[in-house]
Length: 346
Image (cartoon, rainbow, N blue to C red; front, side, top):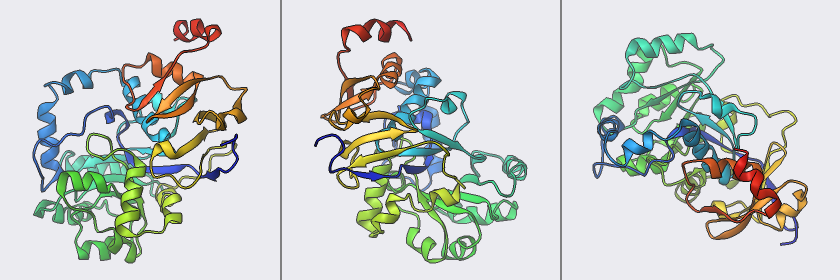
């Protein structure tokens, strides 16, 4: 590899669902299998005052948010939809990926009906409104779309997350009507050993997108979800590269004046396949040869999953100050003229 020679340029991926501040938790499943994610949520809530969760949930919020954004950036995600509060640090000018936020409630289980209705009515009709729905295989999951419809919250701007328990009748009614369905297959397999009816949804005329969910339940990152869809559903690779219908579902317009892309020899299967990541005009990480095109931007030597990289110095500074370490990412010695600034300017 010499500079950028031989590399293909790809548009950034869109991750349609993540809980950014939860990505530092270990993958957790207190029981072997669940029939409802609601039961999993109740189990995990009981564990939050026990090790290691007690210490992990007390880590600085800014560090937890940075860990979630970093996870997404490293796999080529340029925009990620947050399904948790819009923490201020997620929207700073120099974040490693762009965070999108639209109105949401968690679910019909963890939110009271009146809360769901109030939040939905507060949302303008042209703005997407997201809710975890039918995340299970039991009768509760099968009944949730009907409940949401009775509450008057299943309309043109509704976005369903997961949808494992959607019935044929649900799909026939909702797919042509609502904004879309976001699926997180590795999370659903891990918790429920079941999947949403993705192909039936698309066949019924519905928009669909993939989300990574957090590492609390998912295999890893958005590339893991894309790989699964490519291998098990046979979905067209060009559509997967464009993040399916994520931009349409969340009405994400191109960012003016922001040059974002990643480069690789072919569409990546894993994050170490990506030779260069540029976010809003700034090269954040790349193979040392590829980073020569950005030699005027200070960077440090790094290793990502065993592969040599150079890491943007400003980002490295943030990561060095964080209490959370990204698995597989290390960065080495700084040049002497940069060392004092790096460690004394946090």
